[in-house]
Image (cartoon, rainbow, N blue to C red):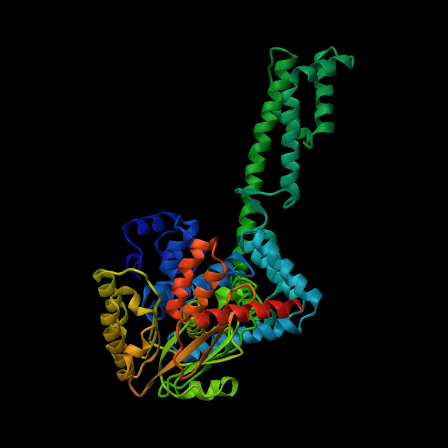
Length: 593
């Protein structure tokens, strides 16, 4: 495949990849999903990631039908990447995309839970050794040598189950020779202690260099030894060379000039000649050593490639297992296509879970027949409808519930565990997630409709998660349009949750749609809203302005401000406001008791 045929590879990107990698290597890197190869060639990580997602999972990316769905997908990946064992594992996680076949989803889930089981069976000492090995791998930028050394270390631990099973196919002896050869060259030169003869020649040259830097001092030192005639000086210089440099008598005599103007000229000429001779010998020896090293690496290339692939694959699945463990994720079940459903039991929102707030309330929710069967044991029977209109208090968690459902569906479609006690999902062809956008103009309305309606127009399985559609147009028109969206969702046998404050204006709803509600229950002693985030199925939730007004009355800065808020209290019901404040005060008193 030509480079320019890959999504996102234009003329400039192609030219850069060809210059740095060559067309064949660049194409291979894209097919492998190798983020590092592209970033090393000069692409930003973001651009490399976008190209690779489309190249390796373009069909899956098409299921993310809206910009908000794609943003939610990226947010999920950011959370998973936080648990990557290595930088390369993080790069591979960033290019994971929704899968299009259920078999692929099941296979990846098998791999993740096999990895989690295998990891949990290891002793603390073995786990620590594995993490330390991968830390060293990462500190060496994931080089070939670092990967091979990591493979050897993992083999030495005797790991045999789950993701570690492929280690048994590696040959540690071959890898050890390859690691030695791979580490023998640094900055284009053969390192010290690789070849004894090369080290001897280099040491001899360095000694000659040191002598040459002090030629005058050497001549004076020889004369101070009482050497005055030519033959005596020559013999003393020869002895000094043999004693202080690792050269042979033949090399010394070959280097001595036949004619010299004086002792300094004689010594300098000899040293310079020796240096040239030694450097030539060094170059020849280094070339032979490099050839031997290259042959060793070439002979072990297949073993090295296998080791690198094994090390990186283990790092990937262990990273996914670490994410699974960190959020107590479970394996989603897949509802059959002919009975679409989305349901979660005690689901946790990843964004909230990362804050470490233990007070976050999990929620149970369900759409469709299978979803009801799955969720009813945990939260009563929500009703078998495939579409719901979710209503309730401001700040009541309606948007968070939409986001949580979106996260569960995205993770399940990627073949990854989900943050819930259990979940059942029908993989969809189009995920329409629309967040609330407080922009009130015709352009936003048109662009929104162009984004969320087309997925409902074909035969694809679609999940609609739409938040406060009324925020982008006037209430009367919003109610009409939203009723049309709900009806279209039902007519197309799609699944959907529509968050709105206009539920009463949507009556009558189609039979396959229901109204659910989230309720605020009052104010706590700190005058914060108490909300039961678990939706009540089949109940119309209401906004609770009386609670907000009660808080404003209680927190008024002065009498004048309080008078204004008390006027609002009359509008929403003074008795309700007074009762709310009394309940909050009682709760505060009770807490002190």
